[in-house]
Structure formats: C-alpha cells, structure tokens
Image (cartoon, rainbow, N blue to C red; front, side):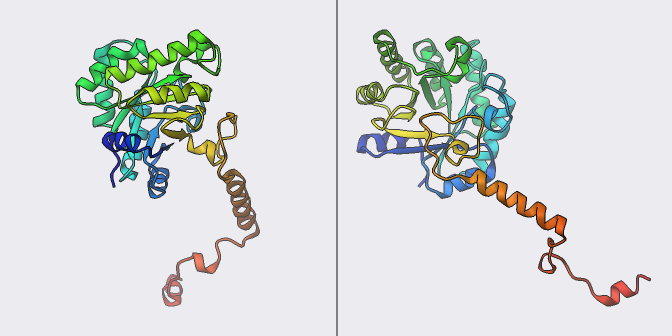
Length: 275
C-alpha cells in the first residue's frame, strides 16, 4: 500500500511504529521500497554520504532535486520526503514556498522537510497553505551546526527542554504532519511524543517515539568517516564490498575474468573471412 501523510497519522493513532531510511539514488530506493520501509528521506545528508562534504551546509537545491527525482523513480510505495537545503527557506516565506514547490514538481517529492521550531512556524504554515506537506525537524538541526558549535545533544537543561517542547507544539500548530527529533534525551522525546497529535520520528531520540529514521549508509556500515552513538549497524557491507572489489582486481590481473561464460561468441567462418 502506498504510504502517505494520512497513513503516517493512522499508524500513530493505532500505536504502530513508522520506519524511515534515507536514500539518494534509484537503485537504493528500490531496495528500501522492497523491504517495506514506510518512508524514504532524501536527506541533505547526501552532502556527507554522496558528495564528501564535511557538513550539509554546501548542499544546493539542484542537488536535492537531482537526487530526489532519482529516488522518486525507484520508490513505488514509500513516502518520499525531500530535505529543503540550507538557505532555501530561511530567506523569506516566498522563497520557502517556491523552493518547496520545486521539490514537489521537479523532485517528485511526496513531502518536504525543513529544520527549525518556533522560528520556522510561519514558514511551515505558508508552505502547507500551498498544499505541500511539511515534516518538521527539531533538536539537533545539522544545518545550524555552525551556530551550535558542533554536533551536541539538545534539550538537556531545563530551559532547553522547555524550548524543545515549545518548538514541537509550534510546528504542529503550524501544520506539520510529522516532526523529526534528532539527538534528544529519550525521556524528553517520549514526553514530546505523548503531547503531540502528529507522529514523531526519532534519530538518536530513544524508543519512545512513533518511528525511527537512519542514514542507510550508517546502518550498513558503508559510511566510515564517523559513527554516531545512536547508529546500530545492521550489516557490515563495507567489508563485503571491499572484498568483492579485491577479488575483481585479482581475477582481472590474473587473466581469470572474464571467463568464457562471460563472453559473446561469433562464428569461426566469419572470423576466417576477415583475413
């Protein structure tokens, strides 16, 4: 069944957990979709995973549209959510609506995601008024990494915890259909989840939320630059991939590959008539 913002809400209401993984290309999207994952996030984490940037700040609208459209072509049942990149929505509500519209039209998104709480409430409201579903993102917001001074757990003090709860209510009131909680203490994330009507999707926020999201390259151990504490590696494909590459290298250099079964035949008569 095709997942949508409606099915997200139905799952929360029924107490069913929501699954989300990132993907940035057609082939990976097909695999995620085949596994029955509810949603694919085309995250601006592609800046780290696919493009080798140190952070997500350098990711552009063109990057998101290019990768998002590829994912949308591969995902038939998962809800495709595309991140709005840094400075595509912070400059004005007009820019935000226009850029969100581009992600829907050109990127073929089913929804968009943007970072920020109370300060982005009006932006969320205007985008949703244009009939574009918005997933909010609060807690650790990677696009604000320079302001945070690093990747730090959010909401640990009393004031910070109150601000996180305020942000959560603000994005819900503004019309967001779901909210990602990143790097938030588990007990606080559980409180937010109980207070909100819309689903919460956690990443480093414990198990008391309505769903989970991970970067697929993290959970498969394909991305090795760093490993966040909250990541569980469900497989170590990096070792298998490297071993396969080594085997290919060895067979080619030894003259073993390609073998006869990997080649195309031609009649001897044709070859003989060439000379």
